[in-house]
Image (cartoon, rainbow, N blue to C red; front, side, top):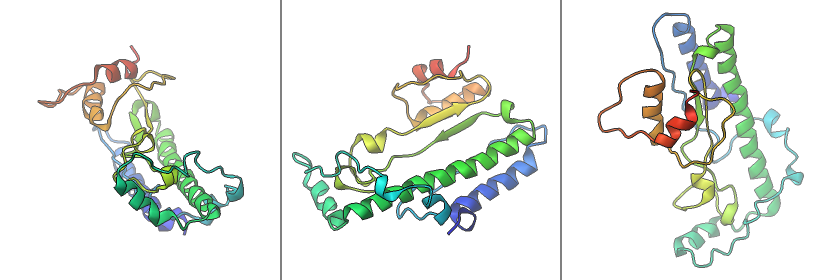
Length: 207
């Protein structure tokens, strides 16, 4: 099923319609686009899936983790996926990567709309996720209850006026840092009780 017929494309179109209403006006605006993908059951379109050679995908190095010295509930959860063969695991990876390719395409639609309106350089853009995906690591899928690098180490990209370009960091920041950061970038007062991550402020600021 292509993105246009799924939640991914429909939600992006809602965002496009919103931009059409506000982008040429004088009032400031905020557009929050929340996508379900990439998420199990990893439903994707054939076009995106065909970009990936399933047989050439490498399984995660820890896919056969015995989960020694881990809580018993981890091993119990792993039993659900024990019957998946290596080919099926690679197909799951291809579907997941295809989801991300589809997101890139939809995100590009939004960026192009900003470019066409000459508003891209005047817009703060944030791309991030709420959690990662095990995708076979430790013999598990989804996020569930596991405390692991695959779940907690997620991407966060910021761009726009006032944000330093080309800065990459592994500093510990979280989604809770976004609200005070956005308020600071647009010159608004901070919410009472909010705490600003000083490291995050330093790496974001272009001056």
